[in-house]
Amino acid sequence: MNDFHTAFWTAKRAMFQAAEAAYNRHGVRAGQQFILRCLWDEDGLTPGEIARRLELTTPTVTRAATRMEASGLLRREPHPTDARLVLLRLTERGQELEEVIAREVERLGERALRTLDEAEREQLVRFLGEIRRNLT
Image 1 (spheres, one colour):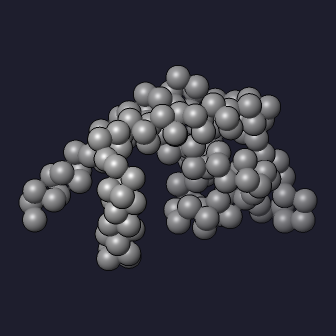
Image 2 (cartoon, rainbow, N blue to C red):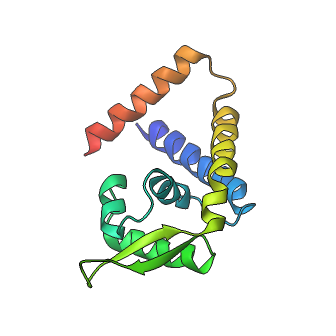
């Protein structure tokens, strides 16, 4: 079992480092691409809505949004009916990154899986889903 923990942790770490390098070229930190994806799908969500979609806590999304706002990726707007809430809206720069980040995601996935055939890739994704379900 120790081999599994070591293999999983080192693969996760390598993936994070590669993602960080790929996205940093565009002013995006690893992990922020998921928030961007939510907003590309539906701009003007609250941090709580994004947190639910990504299975994160609202404070985690709020902290990331603060960094993303400082980087010029999104802006906060008052909620039209609830003064306690804010909406996160993409800036022009944030909108322009959709295709760029999609290409980075694709390249990163291909790089990570380049030695696996299609059946092995599908099996790996299935196994990762099973691991997630086992732990939640």
